[in-house]
Length: 251
Image 1 (tube, helix red, strand yellow):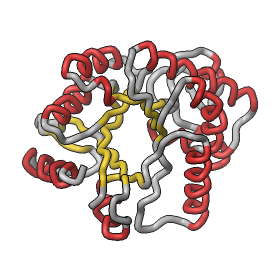
Image 2 (cartoon, helix red, strand yellow; image 1 turned 180 degrees about the horizontal axis):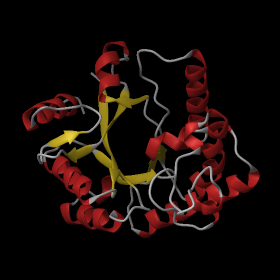
Image 3 (tube, one colour; image 1 turned 120 degrees about the vertical axis):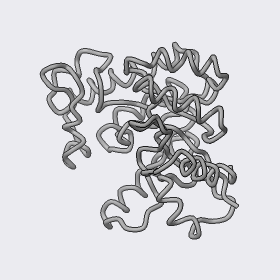
Image 4 (cartoon, helix red, strand yellow; image 1 turned 90 degrees about the horizontal axis):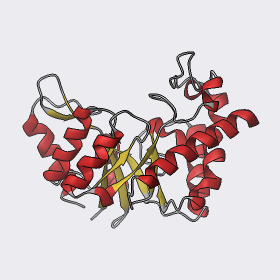
């Protein structure tokens, strides 16, 4: 039987997502969540986590692609921010910049990462797990800036690059294996596997018994107020609950 960690990404991005994450904890549908500390509703998210008693299960969702950065230097670089100062995710759209950026850009990224880590620690959240919005921490250019900070800020565990899937290019597969080997050698804890629920559903039979697998979900409410995972279209609240329980029973 597989052991599962079910993590809700994007905690703090909006009041609706905050409420959805809380409901999932109440209903025992998720086992952890990760916080976007630079987003406007991060303070509300932390307050709710402490109110509902799951603050020990809140890690950091490093964010370099959405909202406003916490620092000023990174706003100078159009690969990261637009003229309005908001993250624009431009670097994430090109393979070259995902692999390599200038030294000045690296220093600006490192300064922003450090500010986000400091804010996470100031919240008093003890989980010290790290993953990221749009998986930017797995990009070579970002990992280069992040890696020296991992132990300085006592990050205990880091999400793998997605390693359960049906089809992927050879080059991507080679890069993912290389990144995951390097991550494990860095001394942080990792799961054995990571992917979405769809990844897991399609590949579960190929995973070893007793493997520890992280599944990412994105709880939110649709326009009808129904709790859904935005990565998996659900036609009813009942369908969503059935899907989550089917996953959680293995944890």
